[in-house]
Length: 199
Image 1 (cartoon, rainbow, N blue to C red):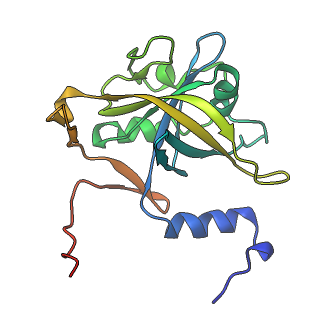
Image 2 (image 1 turned 90 degrees about the vertical axis):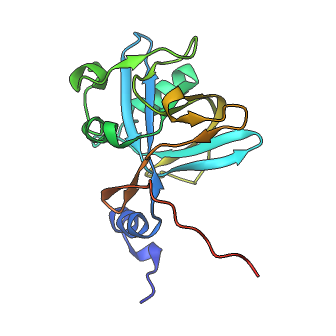
């Protein structure tokens, strides 16, 4: 079966891609508005783009009303955000934070997600996160007229690694159990599989 995407609606295309591009890391993004209300939201269309310069790309959709999501609005206004990687102990709160709330309500308060400031002049990070990226806005990728989602390129300025998951700091080795999206479900990615030697 070959599917012509011009004949499918956006929802069907999303479900097809979400079930086949797996696993997908989750960008748990923390932003703030001009009133310093902390917004926290997860996005699974997310990946590293380059290590030199260090950049990532995350695709941000719209609210159910068609308006920009608070995450995108805040990034465009402040040019700053924090991306926290999700581990097992944060799975439930990360999932809860995907609920659409009014921009005047902070997910940090609504779902008792504790945060702490690690980077001066930037939003806080999730308090017990293992890894967090301190990012600045680079650009939005133009996908043509009326895209359903907007791919946002972010510069990675600094990386926080919790000492509890860090060994050999000079050449960092990070040991944590990240959560990823697999279709509509989640999966832990802590088990490594060795590749065969190339002849």
